[in-house]
Structures are given as structure tokens and as C-alpha cells.
Length: 498
Image 1: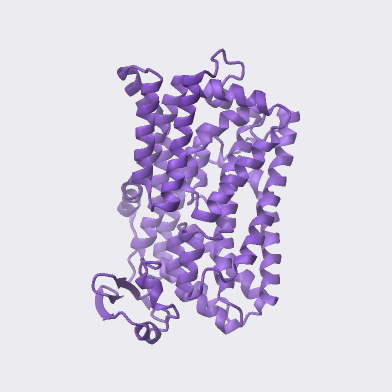
Image 2: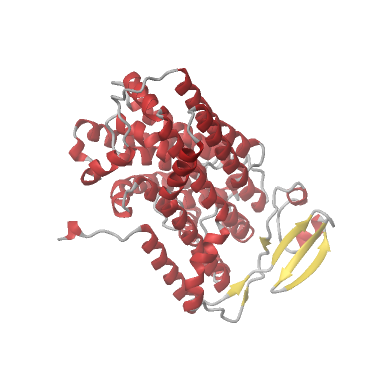
């Protein structure tokens, strides 16, 4: 009987979470920290207390007077561009409890707020459909499956490692949504299941961002907000990255080998036929990989190269990434000699196929909308900052790990978490006698560990693309999360006593 129980759809899960957070706004006191932001035009700080703003001199003395131990150049250079919380300024406010109408509006507001990533997903769906129509996928996957025969495990190693490198260097996360429709057929052709493809991409991204080394959206902005150089603690994070990637690779390969030898060992064996019909490209394709199809595949791959370069080096975000895939789709349609009517109909059908994913992204953002409007984010932060008083070094570091894991449910954005919490949390390290890099590491590792299963993060959107239930993902990944948690706690404890 228990085996027949399953979790509801991702959309329903997120709506339940939104309702629960709405209820929290009635139970958790409202409150807010004063904030400080640097205005580069006037070269002044803007301090906000409740709804009242005050201009302050843009000097180091101003920061010191507010007990903010961050060098002025971090603000001037643009390293810290979002408003930061000012320590010791928490004010309890009159409750702004969210009601039924707010609950109904939250997913709508979330969809509007995340329209950039939603459009990116829809355009991506259209491009995938055009690629399938061209026949280049079938021919390319058949050729790849033939060349990898007997060495399929290299697919796991290469994909996971490359995605992890993207995560640790520039925060490759939301962009990985583009990889699932492309790589799942490749993994299926290698006699793996869709969970192996999902794991290589999602776990690769998660372990990479968890152990960020030079990622400007997490370690650099967090270090800046903590008032330390981002290179402080770099060696420890690098070793953590290597250890984490190795653990993840061993875990994925062990599962993948079992599935490859016996398909019935797959956690999603009951979905095998459905997923293969949806994603499987024929490895016996009669379509030969000729020069025209090779050129189409090159153009397709170049779209990702341009996207990654633009995000990591040119400051691009979803508007530019979406434009790259739209232009790429048109070029591929021309090369494949697809008629205009067929191109438009195929593109729209492909976008429709990912509409469910787009709604999940918007509904997830709605949870943040309720939190912000209900004024409970800062209250949770304030109470979390008081928990660690009087702790020893090792217990303190690990307590911060779990505090950040918990906070990431409500604040899944790494940059948002950094600027909101670091000015409050990093001074706690001084009172315990550890370096502030310990707080930065706990922030990264805590958020990263919970990201493997965080329903308000990217996992539900990823699962919707792969057509795998959240319950089956939990069955697969929870043992890995436990292993990584123990490994992380050991590493953090060692670091504070070295």
C-alpha cells in the first residue's frame, strides 16, 4: 500500500509551500533591518530605516560608524550593488500578514517577476523542437552512441565535471535547464536511465555552486559583504570541490552501472517506456551524419558556447541568452531547409512542451513574494543569528551550516542570501574566534547541500523537464546528501581548528 503512495505534482507541492509560508506570516513576527546602499552617481550611501531614507557620506568612517566591517572600495567598485542589512538595527514591525487574496496573487506575481527565465525556457523548447525536426539529433546521437560503446562511463565523468566547473566558476545553475532535453537522449542511448542524466547535470551544478571558488554570485559577493578578500579560504574550498565531485561521481557511476547491467534496477523503471518514447532518439537511425547535419550540430553547440562566454565574461543574463537561442533556431531552420509554416508550428509546439516547467519557475518565485510582503525574512535572520551564542568553534561552524540550509528554503538566491545575511552573520565569527571565511564557507555549503532537494530552488523545474517525480528523486539523492553532509561537517570542523 505504501509503495503506491506518491507525492503530488511539482505545481501542487509549490502551491502547498506557498500556502504554508502564507500561514507563517500570521505566526512569525514582522520585522526588518535597516539597509545601506551605495549610490555611484552621488557617491553617497543611502540608508533606509523603514520607509525613510537618509543620505550619508560615502566614506569608510560612515561604514565604521554603522559597525559594518567592509572596505569602502567593495561598494565603489560595484562588488556590492544590492542593499545590505545593517547589524544591530532589527526593528519589529506591525504584522503584515498575508491573506487569501495575497496567496492567490503570489503565483501570478511570481510568474511576472520571473518572466525573463520563463521566456528563456520557452524559446529553448522551441529550439529543441527545431533540432529534432532537422534530424540532426538522431544522427548525432546514433554516431555518439557507436563511438562510446564500452566507454559510456566517460559520458558521466565529462558531463558532471564540466557542469561542476561551470558552477564553481560562474554559478552555472538556471542555465542547465537548457541541457536536459539535449543530453537525456544521449544517456538513454548509452543504456542509462533519465535519472543518470539528471544527476550528472543537476548534481554537477549543485556541487559546483556549493563549492564555489571564483563564482562572483556567491563566494565573491559573500566575501565582500563579510569584509574579507575572496581569496581567503580559497584552498579549503578548492579541496572541498575536488572531494565533493569525486564523491558525486562515484555515487552516480555506481547507480549507472547497475542500471546499465539490469534496467529493472532503475528507480524509474516503471516509466522506462514513457521516457524513451518522449526523449529517446533512435541509435539505429537511418539518417546519416552528413556535412549539413554536422554544421547544424556545430551551430547548436556554438549557441551554448556563446551563452556560457556571455554569462561568465560579458555580464549577460536571460535577455541576451534568450536572444542567442532564438537566433540559433532561425539559423538551424534555414540550414535544415524547414519551410516557414513548419518552422513556426514546430517552434511553438516545442515551446508549449516546456510550458509546465515555466509555470513551476513562476510559482516557486511566488513563495519569495509572500516572504517579502509578509516582512518575515529579516525576523528569521535575526533569530537565526542569536542561536550560536556561546558555542565552541566546531559546533558553531556546523550550526551555521544547518542555519544556512534552513534559510535557503526561504531565500534560494545565493546573491540575495549573501547581501542579506553576511553583514549580520559574519561578525559572529569574531565573537567565537574563527575567521570570517568560516561563515562564507558555511553559507555556501549549507545552501549547496539543501539545493539538492530544495523544492523552492531549481529541482522541481528540472524534474518537470525529465518527467520524474520528486519522491523518486528523493529516493535516489538522499543517501548522497547524507554522505556529503557528513563529509562537509568533518571538513568544516577541521578547518576551524587548523
